[in-house]
Image (cartoon, helix red, strand yellow):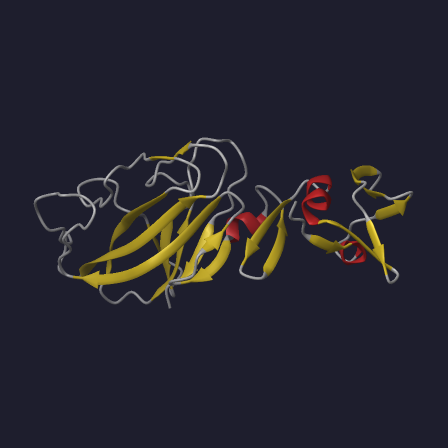
Length: 220
């Protein structure tokens, strides 16, 4: 069984109180795990067990592990990354593949029969090509366009919602994904031509009721 090692004394620095005795670890008196290893004067325990006892979840990004509190500030900020980087929030893997700014956009994933154009001459179409992969061991149904925080932000602190009408570019807005299955799609926006893009925030709406930290991808 693959396990993540976690140095227990590092959690103390995060304002948790841990007690180790008889190969048991507790967080503020709440039992966390008995899967304890003591080596060279250091105590190790599975990071997932520690996080659960603290009422948190573990989010892995590259070689980093973050303990975040469901619904807290870290969740709103999102799991951060950049274009082309696969991010994992503990349940799903998300990648921004390509960013397109254009005066006229032809959908790639949906045969609309027309090109998507902005509603005013001072705007343009922003299309963000994405891939979302089910990282759980269960089949999930996802609404690609209704994530509560999904939006693009710019350097002037403005935000723009994704188009959920005629400009959508998804083959199926509510795909049912088997474990390990992926879906490719585009989020489309109408933005000012002068906008200096900052981030894409993407919320996964998978109807599971389980913690799903947002993804925040830098578009700079």
